[in-house]
Length: 484
Ligand SMILES: NC(=O)NCCC(=O)O
Ligand SMILES: [Zn+2]
Image (tube, rainbow, N blue to C red; front, side, top):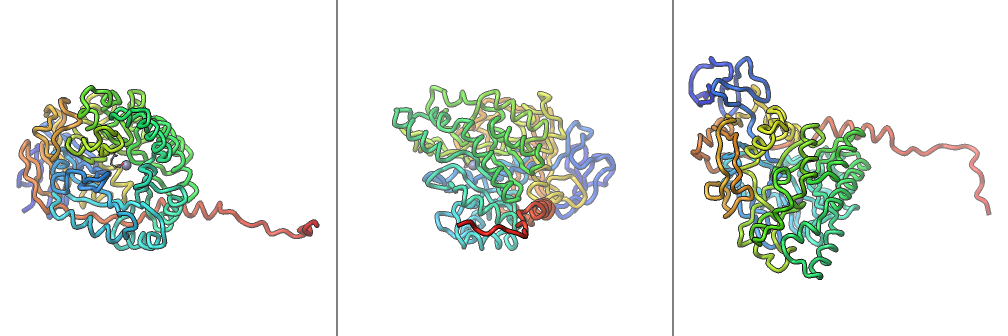
């Protein structure tokens, strides 16, 4: 049976009202005449918009001696409750593990996903097998993005030569490299110094990774991408130094994308100075929260377009897991949650304050990333032929964020007590109503893997330019004999 969203209510009826969206087989088949690609205000005062896409989540991720607590079931349920209809997780091969074997392990985790998902593949070392398998990952497995950690020395970190080799391989394959940009050598050295001086609390986490460390790594990654002739996506951009590097690169014509997190936009470094150890440790993530000047820079970047999308890096650990780091901040598992709160927080602190327009909101939560990851307009659009991943957004609906009522399986929420105004009334995943007002109707196993094909346009443009400006030997006549 076809479904129609009419006046913000899901009905099965004829398409009569201008804001109606008609859905068949999970796909949009008809839309009202006044509906733009991104949004429309319906008669009840709700907006119909493409579901949020979170390009950066870590579900059930093995990390720092434990696993992040939300799995594909609870993580996607949390996303849907907050209007996010698709997540992109990271496949993380273990030391010397084959990329393909790791991908099989990640595939096995997804059988209970409630919403669609995709993967980025992490490159955590470099050898011939990685070089070869990258081709299979792109061409056969439908993954066109590779993440590189410049931090986490001794664990996930890759060095410049490895990263440069991988970036060049990405250029050949039509893939997009991602970087976690922090100088891992400096962080490791500062961590050791802080601990030796007795600074072992969660506040030292922030001291160990100042903005300069992130700015330097962002500049370095941009230079390597430019040399390799490949675009670059910088995950969790948290400070002016990194934003400045991205802004400058874009002004020079480079395809560099920056991704602030909702946590960095709305929570600041004072969280780490809270008297309560648990409060501070629950907010330990990398990069750490920054001060207000950095937050203003990130908001300005979203407004001006120098930063492209807002993610969460959802990597939730329970209080018990965070306590692994009592007496040594370097052992606190890094990561915070946010999947359920990204859209309501961004609407409240972005749209309701006038920092973002509604169209900018849709762009930075959905449409931009769908384009960057090469899955537009299947995802990220309200368009005939697009997947019916939709949110009926009620700008007047409000709530107080609380761990007690959240979908995530952890025991706290970093946004606890925040009042948000702007919430989904309905969330649809490929036409299925998953959230109706406050009722969760998610279906385990409904979520499907979304293939993402290699990039044609951007990588082709860059490789054409690289070839044009490649070094060429000057053929000379009359070369002097070597002097003896
Ligand atoms: N960001 C963070 O602290 N945890 C998740 C892993 C990562 O992306 O660095
Ligand atoms: Zn990261």
